Image 1 (cartoon, rainbow, N blue to C red):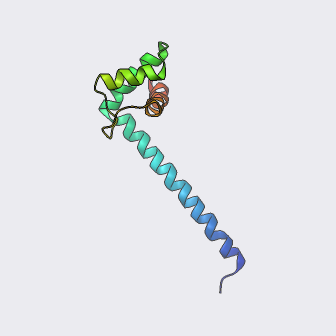
Image 2 (image 1 turned 135 degrees about the vertical axis):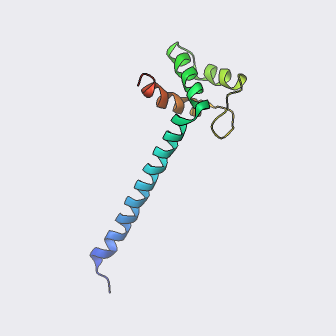
Image 3 (image 1 turned 90 degrees about the vertical axis):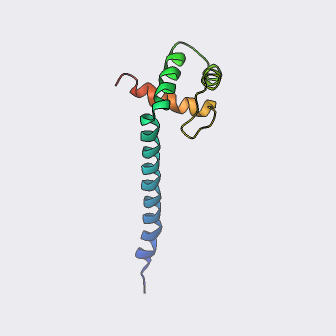
Length: 94
């Protein structure tokens, strides 16, 4: 027999587990992105171009035309470029 308090705790525990798992995976992805050599080069280019006033689409075009690929071997898109910019611009001078 279980009481109602125990029944209420199970969904809360599952929700907390999912949250912790998501945070762990997100942190792992960020660490992987920051430690990847190709991403470091792309991140430097993205940060430099964006800080010089380049549009996101111009940065995407420059990366793809110069053979840069994402960590998974795909062409860059605006979303990937924005993510790398957010990661590298905050770590650029650190």
